Image (cartoon, rainbow, N blue to C red; front, side, top):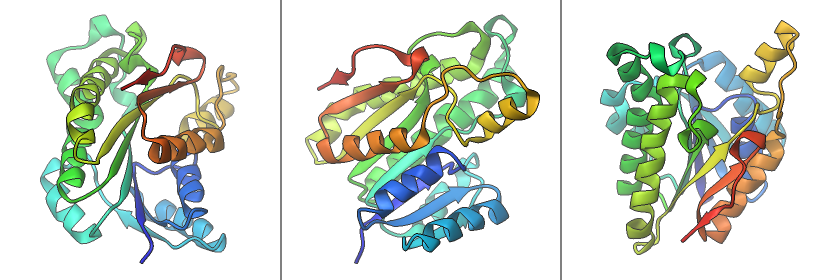
Length: 233
């Protein structure tokens, strides 16, 4: 039976690239996101390359459904989780009120944390989180999402060592730029505004693969807005 990769918050950029990278290594791939028709298209694209893939539409922000969702999926060996960002919630930090912060935290902290814990309890051996660079490098313009991302990063760093003792690798990739082929990149392209620091999703997917196989670091950073030395155990 093939090992299974589950990509939570799968999109056309890094999510799809991650499915291709792990699929080349013999992983079956499950893609999860809200938009069913688009997700089906991603799965068909992977299958056309000879990768076993399926789509599982789900509202990942609804934490009450997480236990049932993971029960439906069955065993997951490797999980990659991307936080849920609602552009309508992005505000400068001085305009963040309690309601806005709670909404940002649900998508970028509480939901990923809930899924992460349940995946580990269910037997996942690698759980990787894709975080925006503001999780480590405060950016006033990203307001509540930076605060929420910092909380998730704190959990990853705090839990990493204890989980490693049980053979579970919990780690983060800090992404400091616009991921190519992503929805955000498409927004920049349609607006005519150049996106600085554009990153190759295939190279980022390769980083995920190395983090899974090498298992020697809590965090990697990619892109001009996330520069710094990688953090190791």
